[in-house]
Amino acid sequence: MNIQTNAVSSLEGNVAVPVVIPGSRRFYWSIRRELWENRSLYLAPVTVAALFLLAFVIGHNPHAHVHIGLPINSMQRQQPDVFEQPYTIAALLLMGTTFFVAVFYCLEALHGERRDRSILFWKSLPVSDTTTVLAKASIPILILPLITFATVLVTQCIMLLLSSAVMLVRGQNVAELWSHLPLWQMSMMLFFHMLAIHGLWYAPFYGWLLLVSAWARRAPFLWAMLPPVVVGVIEKIAFNTSHFAALLGFRFGGSPEKVPFTAGPMSMGVLTTSDVVQFFTDPGLWTGLALTGVFLAAAVRLRRYREPM
Amino acid sequence: MACIEAHGLRKAFGAKIALDGIDLQVEEGRILGLIGPNGAGKTTALNAILGLTPYQGKLKVLGREPWSDRDRLMCDVCFISDVAVLPRWIKVSQTLDYVAGVHPRFDRAKAEGFLSKTTIHRTSKVRELSKGMVAQLHLALVMAIDAKLLVLDEPTLGLDILYRKQFYDSLLNDYFDRSRTILLTTHQVEEIEHVLTDVVFINRGRIVFNRNIEEMESRYLEVSVRPEQLAAARALKPIHVREVLGRSILLFDHVDRQQLAALGEVRTAGIADLFVAIIGNQESKGAAQ
Image (tube, rainbow over all chains, first blue to last red; front, side, top):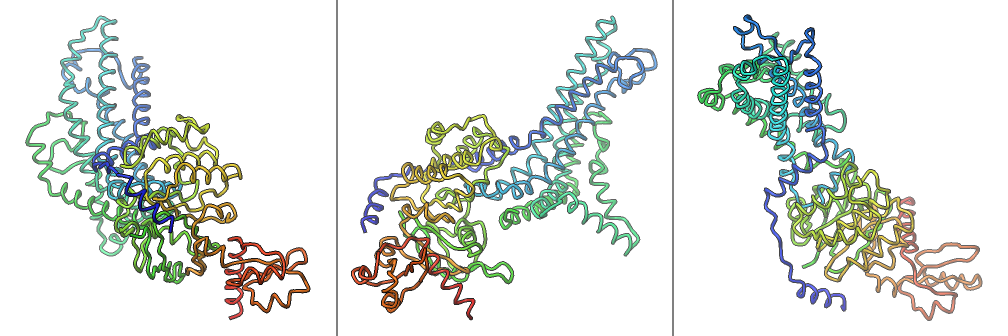
């Protein structure tokens, strides 16, 4: 009895001021959390960039593949691509790195928290499964492309400065190098390429991997690979066709067919408005994004039902 | 409004029934111990209350349905499931940042205050802390949240006796006031005996005993019966008899204290003794059938 009266009076005395935390703040902290846990998201590209720069510096001996101070002769003057080549290699190398990082991140994202039981801690906080899964999905779709873009840009600037320094020492014409290197165009192209291709065009891959990560009890990598292989094999046996494999290859290969920058930064062309329009009006893009939505919705539902392993 | 209201709560994993129609009402301001043998359904019941598992039947926690409303419910509910759930990679300072970032009722200064009484460094990672320190950290985080319901599932599992004692002391002294409700499970019944206001025994998915402490202490008496009075004592229909060092100890429900005093030494029955008597009787009945 006594307890009951005390309870009532202390409740009345305790004027709770509810602080409202907007969903965007929860989302922001969920992303910070991912970056704390997965430091390889930025350490891997930075390490690869550092190694590449080291190779770039060492490579100024004439037998190396990558030349730091480009010997300028008449032949090369006619092929300005030669100037771009090491910059393109740097960009491709970093893109490849972050793609692998993204794949392994996705496979671990909803699996690791169940394995170490920390999902019980995350679920004891007022953050919905939807917020958590969307934050995790935005890592490969948005955050990693931005990290890649920044790393490539910084790497290319350092390369340009290194080359200029070496050329100045050798008394070569630096203006030649700068005029042949459309760094601003390359950067714009890269920025668009990262967000459009590595983010949006590849999104269904990441969605699928996150779904498997939420579903599998063990070996999410194998479970992620198994269904596509099985579908491909069944199709081959039943119809003797390989449309599914071709579809995956097409998706993986880069971008919608008609868009000119299919080969990615290999062709450092000029980014035009019509390219952008063409990309965003491609039905393949929207089909892929719809599929991503389905995968992520399923991942949210699975995270809600799944218990620690 | 009751803090927890359950009617006919059921949950089955395939053919195995984990919760077999639980009816439970927990009022605000109580400290309820949910006690049962392994596999009795304790954790399943807590998971249902916390919105971690779907269930059949009616369940309201602080007026909300846990399964459909988990994230909003977690503004008012805290839980420590067992000491190992803090992620091992996280830094102490990051736990403070994150909880402060997402929890509307978290008081960071309070958590820092609790932590300053420990030897935990802000820059340490959870994997570098001892098991006892992880429990201290988790408790500091939870106690700095102004929640209405705190759920503890084996919170002191694997801790040494000093940490265990400290855990419950700080919980009672620094956290509990009569507007909060605490629901806890543990196997170390003796340690929480003086803490609880209510005791619920659960066995095979059913509640088999539900009393508040005052009622329990006035109803259940244990008598260490002198051998010559054993027959007389048995005539009063004890609910349980056990032998300790050659003396019979009989447990009585609802028998007058004066009457029992004539038979031997009388004392109030502890939760552990009651647990053994009630669950033990049930199990042997189950075995006889």
